[in-house]
Length: 284
Image 1: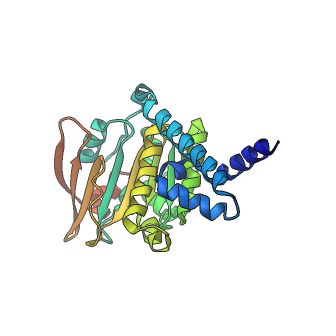
Image 2: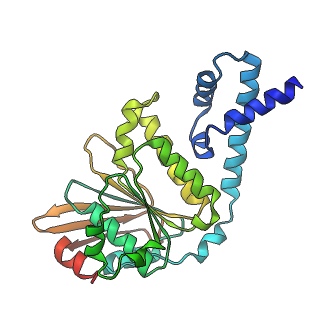
Image 3: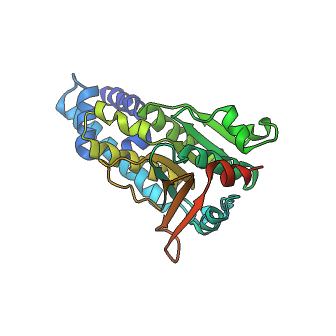
């Protein structure tokens, strides 16, 4: 009976941590989590929980690695009314992670909003938009979509998330809801979560590595197309994900450099566009 009660307690504790968080933890972090959550348990009880968590973590990773990539081959490619971007997106492999990087006022959020509407209207893909910058207002949506905004409701779901644990909870929800698989996930912006690293018990490098691993895990497993915006910071290293779109100001034009690492052949494309003319006019 004691063993049954202990087993139930273990399962209850595991329910407090979602799978995405567990996968992003290394063995020492699992041990630290057990100590924090089981301060009064014996070493033998902690060790049993540790074995259970490690085994659960490995089983999840095994399922992730064995997930059928053929399922993602049926995804509708992202269509974009900006011609140079459309050409790149058509060649992007399924389950890709795209990073839009640039200084302030280079149009990262504007470009992400434009892509979100194109995904909904042209590609008929469901969009999960994490608006941590609170930039996705109705006024901005109307800039890119002149029709009734209610037309977007069935395709674009907006989440105002600012805390890393709530982000992991959303990933867990996506994992469990197959209707959300094969969606387009947009995180605008990643910096909101990177800045919370100062409150983490681990180093900034480990925090970022765990966050990126969680994003990659949910993207690959659920066959998402993930788009991240990120403020360029000279103290940070580039992320170098599947596709890097780097925006630079050049007078009244934006110079966009697109570097692809998961297309064949690999490519590097430069093009210019004007936020108020080219980007907005192509949405009308």
